[in-house]
Image (tube, chains in turn green, blue):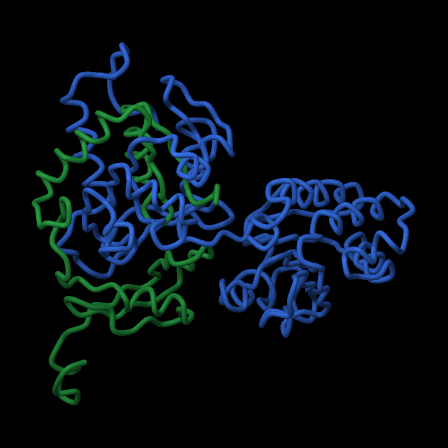
Length: 126
Length: 314
């Protein structure tokens, strides 16, 4: 994207992931072929325009700090303690979202909702 | 009554899309699952299928349709009810039909085609389930599909928007026995959409903390809901710093599912698929962060005098 467009692609070995799964929309197409270097996906065979944008929009670069507490940079562990205090102290915490994540994370979220005695809801209710 | 998209591909000769725009929102739905692929019993692919689009405006998807029916906005429930009456050979007045923006002939033709189909599918989207009538519309659509089974095979399927929203339904169903909008405040699951659904909770200001996982309500929800998120402590897990992150107490950057986080996602027909991430993220996954939060909460005294032995049985 920045400099030297010509020699760059041949220099790097691209990893190819066959039958990759696109989780942008509910179609969850599982026949995508991804070509990726270390930080970004450069080619998305068989993906639609939405899928292509989804894959190319997320890189393995570090754009943000691990966590933020009140807008200030923090470590995961400090943020976890603050989050646990908030959820533990609340009378009726809400666990919401869950659409753009994995089923394994969703199960943890269910367990968290039960543990803190909260409400759990997804995009389905919108 | 529903089925997998594989059955649709191999069997469905009559397809209705209602209140959805797959050409722009699910671009590969036509070509991969529903419309153009050649199936076992539909050797000529698109030529063996009939597609009807019902929507309030002529979207891009109308170009792919054999029949486009433009329903008057907010009259989906009326149209569905008329169709159900016609399926049962009840008399319907022309005035009642006119209210939907369509004629009796158009609706009778649709019913005849539905009955004549070998395998019909009704795909319905947010244009039906999220407009005036909401879950009553969804119920009417599902009932119509069910009643058509007195004549032929007919199924209904919701066109799910976000990647793994179906997975959220499935996981909550098998752990808490309901698909969404569940309160655990008494220690056991209670289901009541309208009371425990997010927008209603936030607009009324019922909840006193929120943890948002892979969503951005700060950009999409009505203003009173966003104000409540700002007023009360909010925690966000997201691959990017979002609008919601900016009004939150705590933000966690996590690896995006399917791109650098492994796991499982459910397709809209409830077929689970293992993700094959292509990148290695410098961030933890949602699962890792939630596990850490769960462990931290477990180190604090329980809110309810009930021993927690371990994670709920999968």
